Image (cartoon, rainbow, N blue to C red; front, side, top):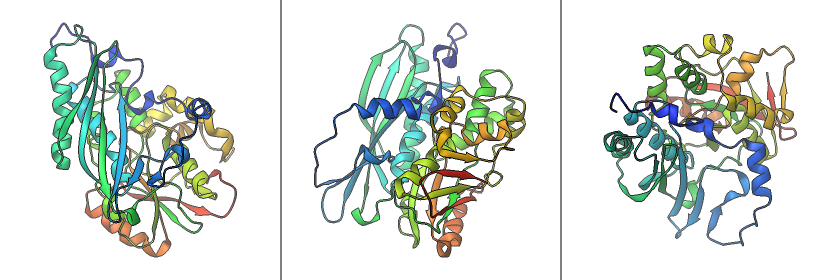
Amino acid sequence: MTSREPKLTSLAHGGGCGCKIAPDVLQSILAGTPQAAPFAALMVGAETSDDAAVWRLNHSQALVATTDFFMPMVDDPFDFGRIAATNALSDVYAMGATPIFTLALVGMPVGRLSIETIGKVLEGGAAVCAAAGIPIAGGHSIDSLEPIYGLVALGLVHPDLVLTNRTARPGDVLILTKALGVGVLSAAFKQGRLGTSGYDALIASTTQLNTPGPRLSTVSGVHAVTDVTGFGLLGHALEMARGCGATVEIDADAPDWLPGSVDLAKDGVRTGASVRNWSAYGDAVSLHSETADWRRDLLTDPQTSGGLLIAVAPAGVQAVMDLVMGMGFPSARRVGRVIDGSPIVVVR
């Protein structure tokens, strides 16, 4: 980026998964969309708010397809590309699949950003895909008012090993593989309040690929998986509750938190998306009356490229913890459970 170029974040009205349309607004939009005709090969479609679509190819292969893109949450173009690519691939991993290739989605304000800067965004995405062992095999680009980058991501999984967000069972323990607080740190960055260590923690979390996904599908007792992104922990836990028709309990003190995020939240730093999230689904969450606003903000905080939320039978908890810890996720924590009851979230 040249000294005369504007900062990436100054060109965007939102950033990262905080750009997502609020869940209640999205639901209203989709309610008016005609339902797709039934297709025998479509194993997972749009009906359950799952992470990706799944199409059965044959008796041993299913294709997982998803797309994700957003505006920048950081000013470094290479980091922006890395974050967006990691986030897009997360949905493939969350379904238990192994990525096979991607397509790039690029919208850039040509003329306001240099060719060099735009190239750095694409380089960041390519670096993540190279780390995942897959190519960016094509894509599409447009001249847009705001910088946008993301991927179409495709993967393969055995049809019997597909993981969804709707198959949790009462008695399951919930494990979250990454620390929370991405949105708070991102907001602090935009306010000029995030130090070097906080920025490093933000980048490390948002560029860590959720590679345990395919191996989780083979662990006995793993019943459901989703990734925690723009709707926050409570929002994605609610999708899991509604998918399985049971109550999800979340222990408010259980998740790990990214360094500095708690202090920043206590100091009033939050994203507009966390406010929209609570407004959208707060009526389906039972929150203790003494829960502090800052803690609610963290539990609804939008997570760009967040961790996997895993529902596993008690007998399989240690195997899951050993797996994810061994694959480089030291922030993995038991954060709740699934119990009999109406499809709501209860925060303890």
